[in-house]
Length: 348
Image 1 (tube, rainbow, N blue to C red):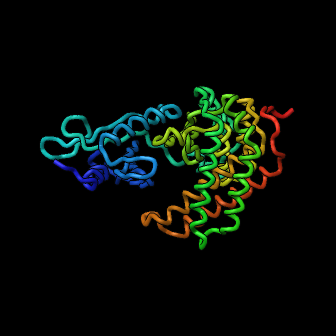
Image 2: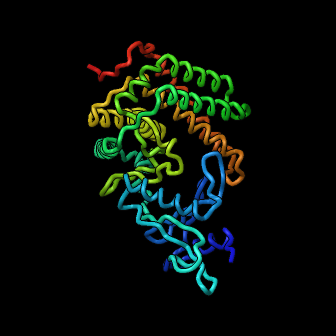
Image 3: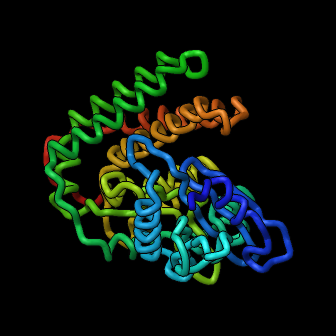
């Protein structure tokens, strides 16, 4: 018997499904639906296809759920509880469990209150050394436990260059929303930095700084309570999780800057560097942050093509904010001289 996506969504929206009396809150993301029921959150992947994935098959979605569970337990073992199968029983009713015809799978998580998320603390001005140090320690320990990757240097630089080109193409496609001249100048500056500082990026590979990390380490994904960790890693693409540790912590610092100011972002970076003794050139960090900010600007502006993500002005505003951060960090990265050595030493 074929079960429609609508029937599965209806099943997951019902309080009786979870044995709770309160309404089930539903959050829709680009690739998933998240159902908040009582003390749990359940994540269902959309049966969609795009440039990175093809989730139209139940088997593929269930394998992706298992992979999401494995990857996210690296930073949030106590939050990611397990995999749930949704099955059609002999009476034609949807149930949790493996008895019957498998219809779909969901990831079951412990529900985190908004007050423990780093983004909430940043917006409310509740972030100080007692918050930033544990976050930096958690991410540093996570990176330390990951095996280093060794991508071919020129191929890795080509990947970064392709990202810059993708950002330019998307951002320049909305001249009525974004300043084309500034976008073009920004991406040219990033491209020029990548060429003139190739030795710095190659040295990071040789020094074992490349890992398969979280991939989407934003403040809204970091929690700080009795324990510290991060949820919602970028599970659908190993290639997009491949990055420099400095790039990953730099991205989180950038998001802290967006929400609470430059001093907070810098403080997080300083704590992390003190723990790891990893001191990449400041200009390289600004380059990573500039590219990351441009990626976020691109992802925001592309929401204009998705009707479910209205209102229009909200995404334009987000894209402009990220673009200004990209331009700011591009200006900072240009203050350094081109690298003539392949070594990266900490400051004296």
